[in-house]
Length: 249
Length: 322
Image (cartoon, rainbow over all chains, first blue to last red; front, side, top):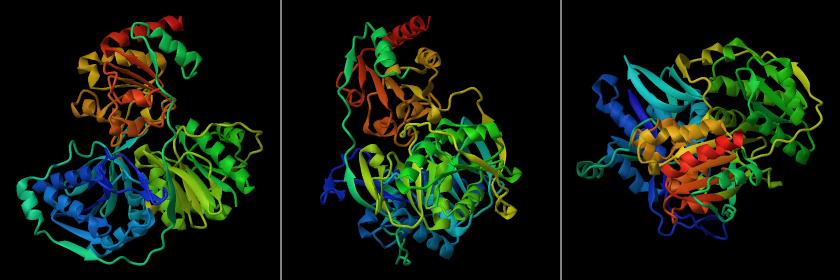
């Protein structure tokens, strides 16, 4: 069985977001780029499955759609333990374009399980995984918080309102994963970092696809009103404010 | 031409978010000078279906088919896409929740329709069609132009006020045949906690952080939540420590929520935590550290030890309830 993990290259989640070009783009000066947090957890779970010989998982590949500047993030994924990587050499104009490129990669290389994080922490779109599955006409399972392989059969846990469902689905399929898929992201060890240097990164040119959306402007969130402080000895006043001023209880 | 809305029901009853979706779609329909068509999948009584009309749905299409009992993303998307083509819909409105996130992207590829996900306002402009959406986990908002002929919008929860209008709705029962070969996801087991308030649907959330000091201290927080009819949540360190289940983790990598009231108890408010809760209408912070960033996000704050403040809050709510 072959697993493909889709990774996005995003600003570190503690980055103070500033704009550039008359608020049309993000100022990337000094920004630390990282693997999107959910993708990092996806990769961790994929590697755990590969580590367990009983699962029959033979390889874990990562795919990224982006320019050469994303190489360090791809190398990091290899250092964590991915066997190889594919980079589709393109600036990604929108999710539809990215998903179409990933679908092409899957068609050529025949993966069994394709894992995508529920969203990227930059555009918060939550659409790439679902789009990939529809481009390929294969099932997708979303809000996945667990993946196991029992007797060669993938068994997934997905979150539903007020609970969980355990589902099975035939390969190939796309798992769109969220919190819970792995406990903590795996960290690259020195040996992994050394090995990553020689692991193959296959470069692919994009297929022509028209993007469907475009960001034309960014703005800061509206500032919040200053905090009103209530005496710690008199929390009844808080209840009063919530009831009569905010009118939320 | 109508604006199409995919509504969600919970065991035959519509969720509040479905009324938000209809209200939002009605706003767009007014801008476009057209009507609203609501789609309901599953077994819903006619009296319940009719409620969608109270918020502006002109036509309600009810699809009740045994094969649609369990959510299968692929099948649901194919059904909704078929209806949207028949209706000639140029705008499709879906919730930005688990099922919406599962269906919208598949619909997008089927219809070659751009998606604006997590929109929280009516479109800023019709030409070009521009929507306002959350990016960078709430640290920025984007003006996104959707260039395709058909547009799909997923509405951020609790971001649009419900508005009632005169009910002029007609109901149509439609049978959409399902291609059985597509039904490949098999549900083996369901674990549902009945009676528990769903965190992502809750109007009020009481959330605990490391300032709670020990999992043994949770009963007072749970008591406050019960008294307020609130769901319980927690910060990432708390779920990582295993003090609370990871389903309760709110924050960038956990649940993104937008309740009317979020009470953060012993949570300092790291950027990643705020990313999950910053869309709450009101935030209350209880923390010993007066410089904790949570106070910058909060409208109401108490500087004090959660262990001392919580019992007093519980008493105050009980007193108020008498």
